[in-house]
Figure 1: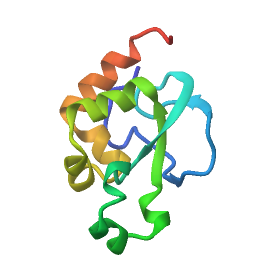
Figure 2 (figure 1 turned 135 degrees about the vertical axis):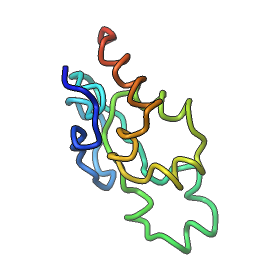
Figure 3 (figure 1 turned 60 degrees about the vertical axis):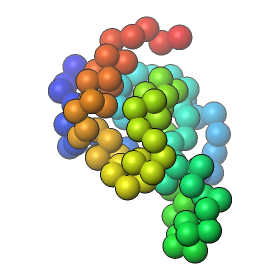
Length: 111
C-alpha cells in the first residue's frame, strides 16, 4: 500500500448523474459500491447565499467514495468546515486526521 499523499488521490470530480456505481475508492483504494460526496455539502444547498453564489452544476460537483470513507469525513468535520476547507479531493487526502482514518479503512474487510 502506498502512503497517502495529496498527489496519490486522483479522483474524478463530476456532477452527480448516476447512482449505484461500483469501483475503487480514491481514498482507501478498496473495490466496492461507491457513494457520492458533494464538495459543497448538500445541507448548505438550501441556503439563499449558496443558491445565489453557485450554479446548480457547481453545487452538485462531487466525487465517488466508499460509504466508510464518506462517513468518516462527515464524522470529523461539520458542513461549513467541509465547504470552507475541503472543497477539493486533494485537500481531503492531505488532511492528517483523515489520512490516518483512510489508512485504517484500507485495512478493513469489505462488508
